[in-house]
Length: 516
Image (cartoon, rainbow, N blue to C red; front, side):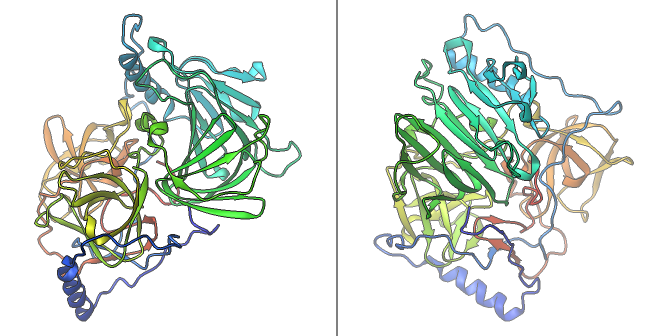
């Protein structure tokens, strides 16, 4: 995602002295400065490392915990009931897609590394002996040379294939609709299979208005890590999420999370979220671009707005065309109102994706690189934006997975887990929950790695490490109404940050070592 192949987190001093703290408070209060117009985006617009994002929480230091532990059913833990595909002959294509997506999510999101998993109509595979069948069917990735998934057709559904590549590639992918991928890694290469690929979207558009118009490949690197692939003859360093599709003689590389570096003919192009790079090819040869790279342009939202984001390994909202950038320290708030809760103070130089705008056009709903979202005063931001069609004043909840992985968690402590009144060990225990008990995830804490759960009608809080789940914790809503621990720290947390992916601040967040 950045112009680097080694991604290092900044380490900050955990101790914030009184003078720095008072200075910080003054800076926050004075952030209300304004301008008549937004400053232009700097011409170099490249994302520079951010020294720190200050999180307004009472935690004294960041806590490294995984977002999720892999679900391992056993004889003592009830196995979730998988969804089944209902009869869809009379269903509308929208209903059919919704049913197909939930079944596909249940059966493929837990797939093992090194395998492809079919979540829809069977794809065409070469060699034929490696065929992938009905939803949930697996095929070893190393045994497949090429694969084409079918387009979406009315109530019949369409193609969905999860590509679980070797762990050392640091990336997983999802084929959506009519798209063909082919392995181009030489057999005698030291690189693992599927490091070099060609991608070609089909020329048969979907006849379902609810389905993506064009087949696409969605690539997502392991959270906070850079994956390097060769795609249609272009070297791509992906630290985030990249969509690849073709139209006519053009390959479109679309950045929807993080930052992407594309290299061809010795020229490097850096892409921010909300941008795309269009590259022409000659005579259907997708192994080599026809020309040197041009400059990124604002993404074409029509191409990707119907992608099923809840099926992504890491669900995320589709950004609007373009991006915004802080010119100084700017407050991020929970709602588009100067009196709403202060969430973070984001320092200068942070480039952020834009999700929507308030009805009075004075506030932008933005997404930081650590997946946290909030509202910022539009006049305090430099902006390079296209048309903003998403207008709202009520903050939408972040996208979450479908089916059994959306909200299910299981107590994984042999002696049982404690259900408490609020998200800290200082609060009273409501009851103990036995090993293997399933609970429903409701929300996450604003200041600690704890989650709010429903345990057979009893609502309380549990430490995240006491649960096993495949839900995406960063997609749970934050409950800002919980009480603070009885003895709160005097100073806010200074959080290690690295431009896009920041860990800490007390929030539950994705595991920097990988996983979901």
